[in-house]
Amino acid sequence: MKTDLENKGISAAQYRFAIIVSRWNSRITSKLLLGARRALSEANASAVDIFEVPGAFELPLAAQKAAETKKYDAVIALGTVIRGETVHFDLVAENAARGISEANLKTGVPILFGVLAAENIDQANARSGDGDDNAGHMAAVSAIEMAAVIADISSENSARSSSAK
Image (cartoon, rainbow, N blue to C red; front, top):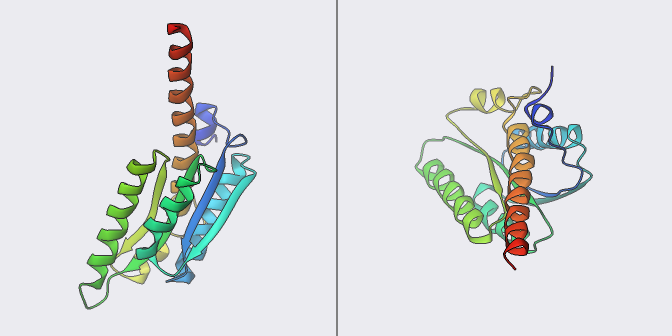
């Protein structure tokens, strides 16, 4: 059975990726990282740099800094926030999502959101398993596709600029 990327004829061989992964809830985030690395490997990505941050709240800044270097065609942000007894969960999950979205738009580099916001450890485990439904795997597949889309858009713009001269 072919993956979505194979069906679309997309390879990651020509793209560079950064993965920013949170150490908080490392039993889960380590599995998200494995899923992302597997997706990139299956798509023949060879240029992958991995950076660790303390928690999900720190993901947006590190992802934005990686994107700003212009060394990467896409950045993958991986983290896990599990609901507790306080509003801390809501604050961290919401700000991680907002910050990653803003960094995405500010830099023009795709930054993929692989942050689990789970009600409990069982939900987090279910979304970080060995299959293709691993949130890290899904974020990496989307990163590969977005790198290809942005490259296509950029080459279309370059072709139009060249033909307009």
